[in-house]
Amino acid sequence: MNLLRKLFRASPTPTNDGAFSPSPLAIKLGTSTTTDYDGGAYANPDKGKKSRVLMICTEERNMTMANSKKFSTGNHPVEMGLPMLHLINAGFEIDVVTPTGAPVAIEEWAMPANDKDVQKLFRDYADAFEKPGNLADFVAKEMNDSASYAAVYIPGGHGAMLGLPDNTDVGKVLHWAHDNNLFTLALCHGPAALLAAKNDNGFLYHGYKMTVFPDSVDKQTPMIGYLPGPMPWWVGEELKALGVEITNTKADNSTHVDRHLITGASPKAANKFGRLAATTLLTTAQEK
Image (cartoon, rainbow, N blue to C red):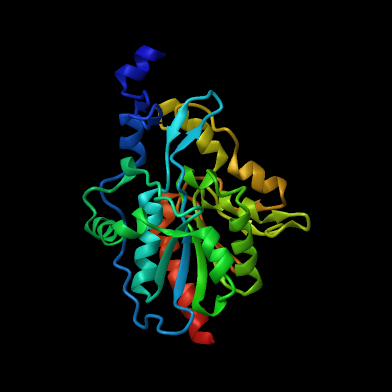
């Protein structure tokens, strides 16, 4: 097995901090140097009061797998970037926050190096990613200002499973968004953070339908060295146990809208998800 992994370059790549990033084979099969971003042109960008989107990112880098090896993760740059581009071009301002205000962790190995739009976005937001807002401060001081916000956005990447699903501030923000009819946007592994909306009264999204990165695919990826071992827990499994119906079975471009929750299945859905989110937010704003 080790010989075959070496032959096909399927062994995860060690990082400087003792973790592993995906193998060369997994990078080749699972990422791209460009994206399908379609330009994000919107005829009537939002200019109303609800013009902001709160983007909650992970600040944690390494995921400890079931075999104790660590996976170098964070937020996926395509899953973060393409929806951001759509929302920005639709007239929305994005406030970047992490749980404690520590820098946003980004899966640099998934960065589309030849995509000019994504590259420019990450240059423009470099300071915001390095010095994001503090989610705890937002909850304590600004969360009551629902009039300025249209949505809460949780980008994907396995990093969304780190620190967010059990964060009480994330749970408070999700309930705040729900109670004030703001949209919640979550892509790929982003729905893992929705688990924070569980409390003594139950799960906020019980009975919802959503698209999520399939557990079945996560269970296969160690074979090509994308992950250095089995996942410590499974996003879909946890959501289903709380009464969620997952509508997709593949890591495709599926998206879904259920009430004020918009979800997408994988990086392949990033452009479609971004346009759906931006269009939905614009339509809702114009109706008001």
